[in-house]
Amino acid sequence: MTEAVRIITEQVRLRVRRDGVDLAADDALADQYVRDEVRRYSERALGGSLPLLTDEFQASREVVAALTGFGALQPFLDDPDIEEIWIISPKGLRSLELRGLDVRSPQGVRSKRQRARHQCLRR
Image 1 (cartoon, rainbow, N blue to C red):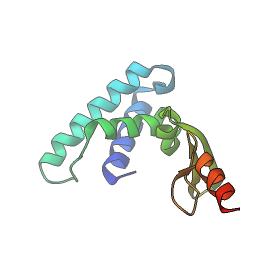
Image 2 (tube, one colour):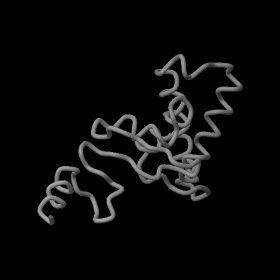
Image 3 (cartoon, one colour):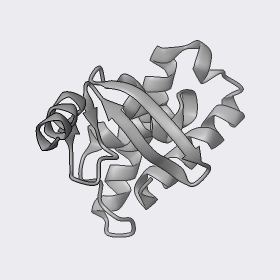
């Protein structure tokens, strides 16, 4: 999470507490709160007091995921190409499996079929 996203997330949390609303129950309200705060942040950042956002849409997605989703896991859950996510330690993702591709392979990303074929040919 970038510093900008962290700041925006905290500002949305403060507004949610102040207004006493539940963003998990209302996706439209969550989007509105995040959109408002991203706009406010961008205006302040143009003044030079804060780091600029490189991608407002991505920042909005990260903030919504942090507030109502699964945080850093949300992009993986949203990606239709990801079949499995393995969390091996609390420090983060160590490996994940993508539609027939094993990212943990020391030879690089190769399909399971390619590895099996390679092993058969070596015999």
